[in-house]
Image (tube, rainbow, N blue to C red; front, side, top):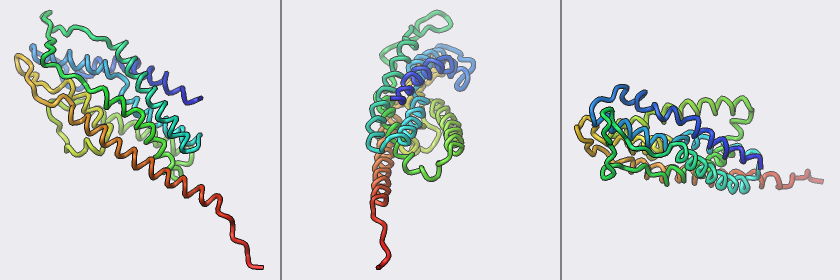
Amino acid sequence: MRVLWAIPVTALLAAVLLPLNDGFYLTWINFDPQGEGQQWEWRYNREVMRNTSGYLYGHLLALVTGAWLARRRRYPVALAIAAGIGTAMAAAAFLTAHVLGGERLRVGGDGRVLWEPAVVGEVQHGPLLVAFPLYALLGAGLDVLLAGRLGSRRARTVAVVVLTIGWSVVSVDGLMQVGRIDFPAPLLWVVPPLAAATAIGMASLSLGAGEIRPAFAGDWGDTASSALIIGLAAWTAVAVVTGAARVRRQDDAAVRPEPHPPA
């Protein structure tokens, strides 16, 4: 199946984005971490970012892959393949990020080990990985619903470009949430990309970095992880069911016999 291209592309995304994840904290959070607290936060943020490399853009790729499938397969077949390929993409992202990301001791500028497992929160990989097949299913449903409005190749290209830009802005905002979110909390439940990014960001930034010893300051992304899986599942269910209803109406219209003029 040609759709298998999505699996190596997902792995490539995780590998290519690894250097960006390495430098995310210094670029967007704190360009000059001072003291043991900030050094600890920097090192741990880098570790979490490395071990989730490719997840967020992998979600976008899964969405596009599902839409691509819906244009080339009958709707029920497209949904079945989307669920399978989304799961395979999740495995590719997870394995690539963990193999290349690794796990190292977090050492501060003075050479002291800063990692204290008792206070380390772990990013919830489960919801982030389940999001891959859900996004693929969502993409298939949305493609059926928007087929009339995105019929031309140019329209689809523009839509993907605009979606990628918006996805990037939302992802950076979510990854920058330190300890508490600075946007209305209900957005986590209705904007899945924001929830996914916030889950990753809060997993490493739920600390008071200004303290001599890092202090607990957030929920390690637990709320965002729950919002991601529940909100995305709801959007997916609506899109898939509505798409199925539209396909059924189209099929019924195609087989309905034409009325004959009276003799």
